[in-house]
Length: 496
Image 1 (cartoon, helix red, strand yellow):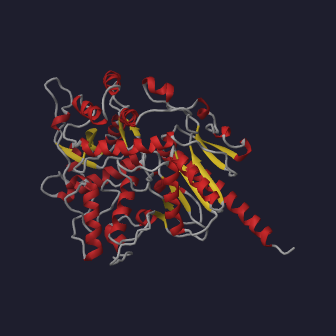
Image 2 (cartoon, one colour; image 1 turned 45 degrees about the horizontal axis):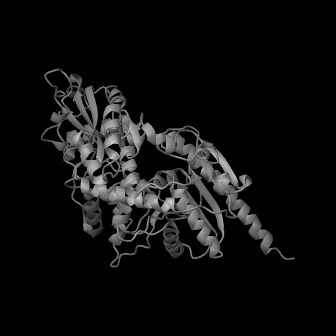
Image 3 (cartoon, one colour; image 1 turned 180 degrees about the vertical axis):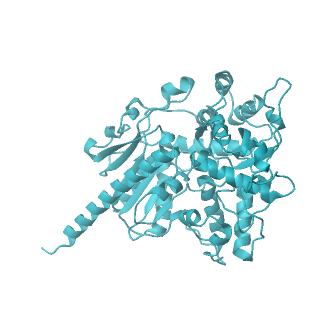
């Protein structure tokens, strides 16, 4: 009943709290999802320490005026959970309380739980950033993470950073002329160590791609955003892949409510960005979910330009259902409802009925009124984001994938996780539940290499073990395609 959904992951906070009380310093704990200062939902743990915690050598003293002790407690508990739970289930902040606040009925008083302060995050003693690069990075980190200040010894991920924020960090840093990749951030997540490897360029250089891995001896692999415009999945996946090539994410092109491109136009713009990195083929593409349709449109344009497409990785990409004519508003409301699926059935049904006659803004306001969205959240940005995503899905509706002379590797989820209510009936084409996900209606079955991956559409990527297996499977397919391309090149270059 207390299930929450954060960044697409369904999480049971009670499971996290149960792991916390296994630690010798913790007597009681509760974990909740709450908005931080940036408006992003995060997990926050509230802990009541055991009496012995103040008596044992090496245990931090009670947090209070000294933020270092609170940071030490947060570091210890974060390490404890990190060894037992996947990253997305580890809270961003750990707040120590003398006791959990209760209502007169003896239940947890969630409204009385205080917002976490800066010392609730796992961090070392504060030391001010030094130099122009450290100062610039610290400012970006503080804005992304919702913190008042960030020190030169702080660790990006221990402060609550994750793959999605890593993508935003790369983009923000690039706009300032700081060029580094996601793999650089994973290897050196401490601010001063990352800054020592960078130079601040007078003129920002941003070719329009997000560097995930900057080095490799082979042509690059390009990841496309999901149907939600999210490239962050590529960060974690690429970190687990065993491939010898640079990796880039190609974000959606800029668009607004007055000028939204068709899928073909988006593909053309993406190719222009890709060619700044790799002027000629063969090209390798990978995409998750409905972002694979954009990847397919890109492949079509590349073939028309006379370029070769040597590798296509589809991660649970279903062929678009034919005949879908949902309006922009209907699609946006479906997306809002999907994000609130962890609600209890009664409130969810109320929102589902309301959505039939409401605008995006009205549905968000209704969700806020019934407590599905925090009362202090600014809904204007949410409405803009949902409309942007909906416009991409309108573009998908207008696209009919043609048959192409390409092979695809379909890494499909072995479990099915359909949405709630009536929407499940019309969510996907019936053929899309097969391992080929319906692409055999467009391509010859021999051109589709279906590879099973444990989990459903979300957990195949969100569960660390599933993600590792997926990364391994993609790496194997990538290596085979590369070896095959090398053999073809050798044959073509061999003397008669």
